[in-house]
Image 1: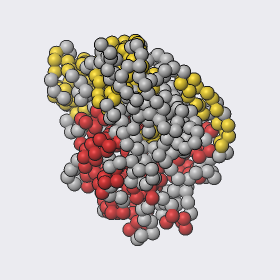
Image 2: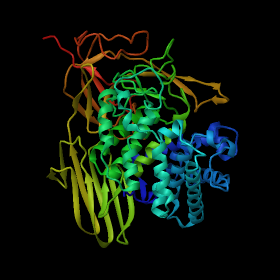
Image 3: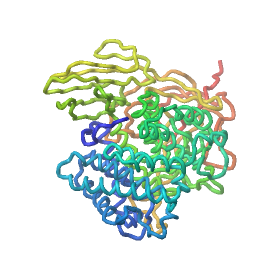
Image 4: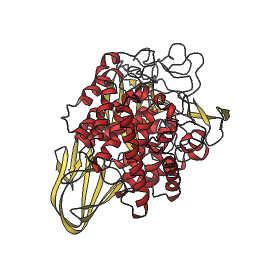
Length: 618
């Protein structure tokens, strides 16, 4: 069985703590103060949305509050937990609907609130002053999932709609309960969920090409979630894992993959077109799937994919101050202005790519907060013999091994730099194994100045006192091939793009009873600089700068690549005046080459990422 360390043993530091603080001070950290679907939710006795939005919000706000040790945020999160438990029915039913409404209430939010309560229990179980709250939440979760079992066993409740396609999310709280209670109903409920849930392996024929039709099985968020279904099932039941996730990932990547490591889906699968969108919720859920898949399987490829998503696709779709976000991001994104006429997006509206409070739909508003905190929680993996470090990020672990205190501190500016110092402190002698993953992109590695050639750095020894281990990975900027004979540039785990200077136009208005007033307003981004370029050279000069108070900042990027680009003939997509066509008219130079600078994809809110290698005149 996979194991994480106790969340309260993990403390973010450096730029990662700065990123969490930005989130806490931004939209995700303040929805309970102003957004009716959280502030006045039926989950806490109000009259607004009583389905997925409060559980989605808590799924990110709760770990954020505890990781930052922010007492005000902790109190606000726990107010919701207590209010939800106060309203739990005597038979265990926990969602805000009447008994008569239960059969028609989509069980997805039941599974989601189960995940939230399980996570809350993990955070507070080892905090003495939270003992009573932990017992209450633990009991509430037990009663809720047992109630769901009874109702599904007698066919009062059946999975349909979102719950049918997200059935495996219920395995997460069941995993927690099984670790504490050896009850027959726990695996029995898991079996019922699987029997009534969708068979994701049966849908691959429908993923061959994009269709302008909304379906549950091509919905990109459902797909982002589904990768972990077999691993979560096998972790709970002990069945043999057959690696379905890898097969499905490769199948989808070939047909719908993006340079940023995610899949197109606006909202449903959209092919390899660099001007199609990717929904923010899908990035969050892909990250979580990768985190669980690595924890369960230990396969390094899932950590590589997690890095690419986290350092590229995630920051790309949220503004620097984290007060606004997009519903859909585009790899080649030359404008974020309202689209006249029909939308470029297959099933989303013409404002899905604007930065705002809830562009297109509010699910991402509620769900955007989970990604960074859960990424921090995945920085360490507990093994039978000690500690594994899949991510080189600035974070500290304080734990006990064989009953003895051990701390591990990672001091690094990764991914902006490729080196870090791992400091192990053990006041008493203790034997354990420390493993440090070497990322798949690394062309070489040194450990304490000596060359290392493997994919996992392993120290099996007795530790006492303070030990420092310096690890450095080596790479050079590299071009990768993309569809339509285009290229993209990567360096380390980072994707780079040509930034387009943007004018941010504020939109303040009221819609759906919600006033979009600064700072929770919307923005349109209009291009102020040229975007029609191709690569004139495959040579890049690396320019490093300090990591700023906004780690993924377009104004002060921590790392840049200087190169030569050349103008090319590149039209707008057919029918649009602010969407680039997927490829240029030709790969021949339409002017003289110029020196320009690429910045990290996540920092460039308007950008050209996929460009041709231009045939230069001799």
